[in-house]
Length: 252
Image (tube, rainbow, N blue to C red; front, side, top):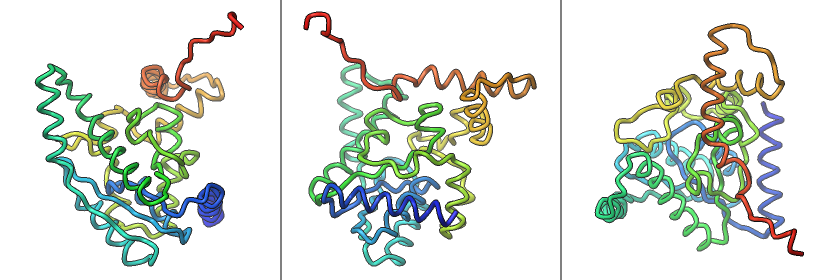
């Protein structure tokens, strides 16, 4: 894993230098992906601002990791902000308009955090760093469009979730984070990613690879998991494809 880690760190550093950016801004949720991505950022030596943004959720692991980063890297300056009051006003306005979808509210939390990350990044000549992994970003589209999917660079988006766990172990990420069940932290009931997806990341990765190879799946249990994978993929494909543009080519 060390060679992969070195490769990602160099890639982040090279990109920032190419565009003369001096700061890396990243949201820290307490999950394995943001823990790994933020640590890789810190290893570049570039100024890093990891931000814990609270909206009706427990931030214990996020705070622990932000503190760990600050203690271990001189180029890290952690920030903690409570966005509950802002989000509460947004909820009231949305309810007044009859726009009270629970799923929409969950996604709006992610979009509010994205706004804060870009506010900080633009104020510090920085880049917003994404935390998505390959199966989420390119397999099932398990992210919020213009939320956690709204970033400048995605350093671990070509790594499967299982790869991220291996990298976390190599980086000595806090054991409590390595052992925690993955969750997007967007729901009041604390539901996990597996609760929402209906299948484990390991099984999603297997289905993704089988789908890419056009493999014939014969085992009943694998067929069921493939159905779940395809369902999520079809439902979220619009996020993963470029924004449709009405072509005017025939008038040229």
